[in-house]
Image (cartoon, rainbow, N blue to C red; front, side, top):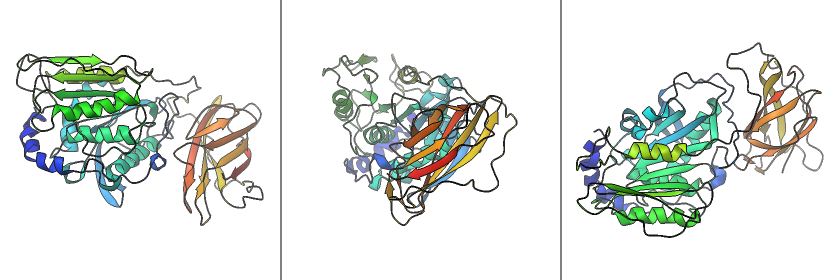
Length: 434
């Protein structure tokens, strides 16, 4: 009943919520996101294959010049070579990351069977005003920290939250449509802004028919944004009558493949834990957790076949103690970027490497291309944080959509696994921009 106990404090703060400007000025665009992304093609994160340094518990991170916190839950028996689902759970007004974590991330953790990495960020002033896009930046920064260290399936990123947390989940769907696979908004409204809001994202809205804090019309409005974006057939879904103590879930017809919209209206007030047949919300008896889990888990990973590193660390070929020589960019783009290879891991029949692209100039570059030559017998089996042309011999790697812009002295990294003997590093490494 943890969440239910916070309903009264939320209602007391409703005036604060409704005073938030729905169209908060959200700084930056999708180029500010620091995580890989398409909703259809897996790109393993840089943390895949690495021994993790992050552990479950409360973490601190610097974001937008402030010290922020989040609670991380890593699956038991974590396998560094297995890409995991990643779910963000945003708390409600006057709630906390600890409330979300202690309630099993809206009841999803017990259903996940250790298949999911969970994150509960902490909002400033116990809310998600998202002033100047600071909470979207926090989402980006947490995602970067996790995905650099842990193995995440980039086609399996999700967000959910109740009330103000639902508003923040909606803001993420609007602003990060190529990053987030699906969201669930419980009793939400447009309180954290909607920067963008024109691209499809799988969407599940849940709302009480007589919500006294955020009227159900506000939840319908959020839903209809993605009914339009996802190309669904417009309709007025059936909703239960007052006193029925039931809920009705509708799956929209006509939606673009892979982008469903669901709407669940229930006979109740402002709560994340309605129970059919009862007027008393209850975290352990609510139907919402099961329906949300089914909605999220319908999206299968599109992991391509790869030669995965072994689950135990084999003998490795240590990286060289000095930076391997690189070939300078060709004339015409003098010194705009450099590329440096590092051997991460190796095992019989395969290896993992990464390349750091650096901008050592005083001007920002807006795209980069790395060219390298693999030794005979080597072939790339998977590559992340970039797009490659070719898998053997001469290979070209271009920046991903989110890491092509590098300010002065900034850098980006892409990684790959490959078959063959990793003792011979790639040669003829060059970097040009754009």
